[in-house]
Image (cartoon, rainbow, N blue to C red):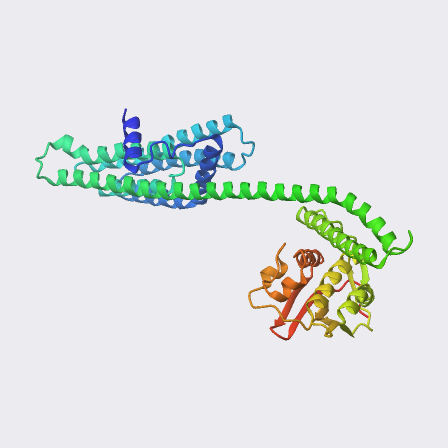
Amino acid sequence: MMWSTATSWLARKSGISATYAPRSISHLEQRLKDYIEGSLRLFWHRQAMYFGAFVLAVSYYSFTIGLVCYWVILLSELFDHWVANRIAKWSNHNPKSARKFYRLIAAGTVFNSSAIGLFVVAVTIKEGNSAHFTPLLFLFAAALFAAMNTHQVFQVLILRLVIFAALFLFVATVNIMETRPPLTSVHWLHFFTVIFVMYFIVDCSLVFLKMYQRNLTQIENLRQERDRATAAYRAKSEFLSVVSHELRTPITSIKGPLNLICGGVLGTVTDDIQRMLLVANKNSNRLATLIDDLLDLQALDAGKLAMNFEHVDLSTLLRDAIEATGGYLRDKEISLVEVGLEHSIIVQGDEKRLMQVMANVLSNAIKFSHKGGVVEVALDKVDESARISVRDCGRGIPEGGKDKVFEEFSQIDSSDVRSAGGTGLGMSISKRIILRHNGTIDYESDLGVGTVFHITLPFSNMAAV
């Protein structure tokens, strides 16, 4: 009767009703795990408190009382410790196991609280007609400790507080029952003080209980947000993968004939048709590049982008990348300056993917440089890394634009960038590839002057020449 009354009253007072009751086995499991984590963490704190009480008991009351009560408390602690270790190793998420451990914790709570009660009752009787300062103080410390550290399992907290409340009332009324003093006596003052202390402990319990529940709610909300984000991310990746694969076949079938026609293999066409075919061929190439970027992005996100690491000569790689962009340089009337490419620098990397990075960085430098400008490609050694620098003569990148430069499907918001076009995937993919090489990619920029991108790659075991 006392149990159900105390539980319902505390629930109504805190306004929680069934809120603190586990809504599912997973919630119960979370609470049990949190409970035993605190129990294991505070194990030696409790032993210090119990040992102190033992020393006081044997010094000022009775060696027999102190020793018997201390050993009973230690037995209850060993039982709790055994249960806590079993729960700590529990990982099968079995509902039967959850309920079993819950019952074991409840049994341990009764055992431990009763052991503390044995000490309190024994000392109270030993003191006789007195203020019972020591047993009340010890009981207050135990109840406050419970309020602060057993709030994870609501029913267990209530069970322990009910037992302690009964002990408080016993200590407070033992003298009253024996002497029948008037209401103005000090014994009644002690009784009402104990009632006030009990209320204080209950109030502290509710504070810690609400704080824990608020944290649980926040964690649950974060978990739900994570699950939704994960589901959305998975759906996006699957969509990109399916669409990209479905588009690759028709684009390949379009590019082949266009290349043949534009190359004159299938005969000559009029100048007007030739111009239209060149535009179609150029745009089909752009679309094919976009599809390849989407597939690379999806593979990078899934951690499935294949990398074939081998020794790569960066000077040769850069010359090949520059030669591949020769047509673009001529179209934009851009001059290119090479610095340091006469010396071989060897790194460990995937040549194909590093060429992809250089194609992105060089094409950006050419694209954003003004007509007739100069692009500089430099290679040198910095500490234990090789550094590639690509400098353009464009408008530069505004402050705070770094996230947009390396973000997916993002471009710096300026007329220069928008006129240049692009999908916003190249630099994002490049950064991920460089990170896979344990390198870095960053830039320095001055508005109205230009931007220089720096790529650093660690040396391989082969020495730089």
